[in-house]
Amino acid sequence: DIQMTQSPSSLSASVGDRVTITCRASQGISNYLAWFQQKPGKAPKSLIYAASSLQSGVPSKFSGSGSGTDFTLTISSLQPEDFATYYCQQYNSYPPTFGGGTKVEIK
Amino acid sequence: EVQLVQSGAEVKKPGESLKISCKPSGYSFTSYWIGWVRQMPGKGLEWMGIIYPGDSDTRYSPSFQGQVTISADKSISTAYLQWSSLKASDTAMYYCARHQAGGRSGYYGDVWGQGTTVTVSS
Image (cartoon, one colour):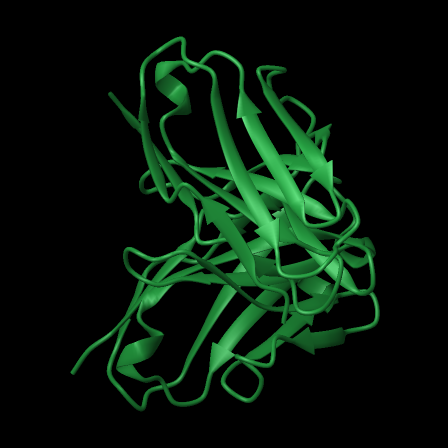
């Protein structure tokens, strides 16, 4: 299975900060990478697919980049509703695998 | 609007059987894969398996092969996840999600259900 490693595992940031989360695959996955947001007690929500394509309805403050093994999720200006845990997932090969998550907390 | 509505919370004893459901709406049930994802208490997401309701093609993650059964009933547009003999370690939140395909037999969930909590305790 392809291993997905996210860093950091948690971070503290202030409202208005620019935040970047990194996801690394154990082997090349082209651009078959998705990002999800999960708030406490809620289901995950799809934010980005194909590494950089925004899901319908997702605000443009979220952006994704990368290809091959290294990927990033950026939140341009953190807002109170963005405090959550973020997961990456590769879907290049079977079985799909998730990163361990990055918890974004309020500083 | 695409929605997936899951069945309610379950409390079971070890050794009991269980079948939880996922009923999508807002799209053609037989035209998209539906997958299941486990989240154990305080932990991350684990992809379990997937079914294509159009022809019942079913695939399991090796970690879950033989542990659960995924099925779908086209007549009532509902997908299922079932256990024949629950263990305490099956205690978790289970999510269904409509999946899109990509890569070499890869899938990701683009619309998710609200989750079903399963608690297994004697």
